[in-house]
Length: 530
Image 1 (cartoon, rainbow, N blue to C red):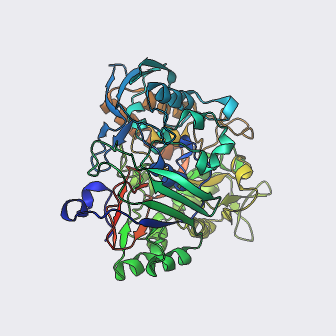
Image 2 (tube, rainbow, N blue to C red):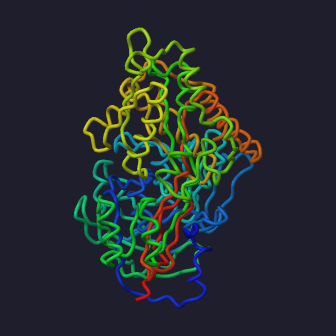
Image 3 (spheres, helix red, strand yellow):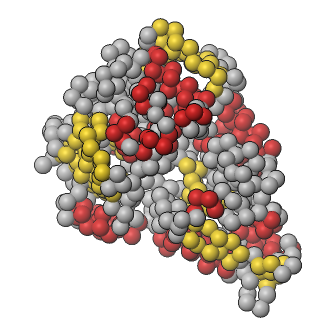
């Protein structure tokens, strides 16, 4: 049975006296890329940033309540257009500079406004930002152009980790070097072999953990060694032979092997947009709603989960996970129905040719997509989807995630009419992060980073997403999240497949690993019982 989500599910906190010392050997599937905090949505990035940066607030992973951290208290005006934070005194970055109101203001000005001179994009978790105001050395106020009800939760996420002024003075491209990231967290970067290893050591004077965390003071571990090991079997072998202590991305087929040998599985949910295939209507092949609906109904998500995954991966019943805020069960709209899929394709003018492929005006209904390396068993998932779609005459070609053309092709709807996607965040704004043009723009609308989009734009969808980000009435905001889920499925813009957890394996002597609200590990209170 997989363990739970975080602190409250870790009985060792109450039952054993922690031991200080030791270095945790942590095997990661992929190297980190850029450690500018808003890039922390990529799990290898977030897994590092979560140890070396602090946030203004802390979201309790059990209750999802926002609690004090670097901010001791705060006030929000009735319109959610002004947020005032009162900071803890005495907090410093690891270079000795103060984590004061001026530093917090500089961080959120960069996150909320972006900086073209540094190639910093606007953070996807900060909506309607206007400016900061330093009231005094320990008080900062943020002003918004329109209501921003998700901002308080946004101050708790990995993308809002606080970094020093010297870090903010670097260019985005420089921040792949972990040694240049100066945070205030419980660990600091000691050494890095780019793309291979990263060594963190405990910060001796750290004494400002989240108010709600059961451990306070210096981290119990002396350090953490990250080693990048791309092969699943090698990571598992190292864990079972005790050459490693903790491993990310345990595949479902290895779960029983670990459990049977007394190792611990952790499967915290990501509470956001499900593991899905996004469909890009700017491509003429999927511009017809009936074609998109056919792809939805040709996908047998139950078969995918049963074949490739475990109970830690619930079948998707909506656009967002059942653990996400505002979730609505829309399973009836996602029924596997190949007969209906066949009917819809025929109605849309796509007929079967002699090779069993759908054809219209001499063109075959054929797509190319790319594996998403961070997503569990994504290539196998896409290959099984390809088999399912082939039964209704649709051809899906699956390319490797390491293909050189992947990045550019993913921004071109003519080359990637469909593409896997997901994003985690424990706030209703997560759905805007995924689909809004100036955020992740999973559907490739005009107005985003891609210059390959000709005309597709859905103002109805964008209006709903903007409304979620600005609605101050909590009940109405949740209603809007339901409206968006219904609209996305009615328009068949996405094919949700399963709710994606982050699955980790740990040696039995690794105690008190915690996870933030969307599954990134925190080793602040972790200790080794050996």
